[in-house]
Image (cartoon, rainbow, N blue to C red; front, side, top):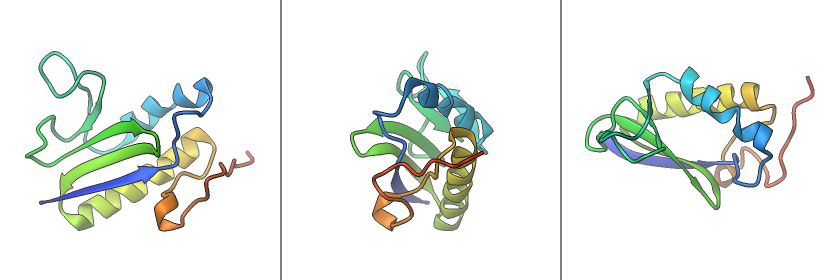
Length: 114
């Protein structure tokens, strides 16, 4: 297993109605086990697969650059999981979700017309 991370354009300054939908994205993802607390992981942090960072696991945290996903898993599985997260987040949140650093999206939010 290897350590991976990415920063998505799900920013802290998005409207509350968008942030209220983010847990729906989390729940749709493979490996979802819930938010940390009661001795499992860090309080309020979303986790997938395991609360233990030394096992296969993914966690998310909100950083100034956007939503950061950190993972301990093999590269192929990480790339597949990350692509699925971006697709589901785009559908649920109503804008194109991607990595600015990878050139997938710009700093401006690209809203999707439904």
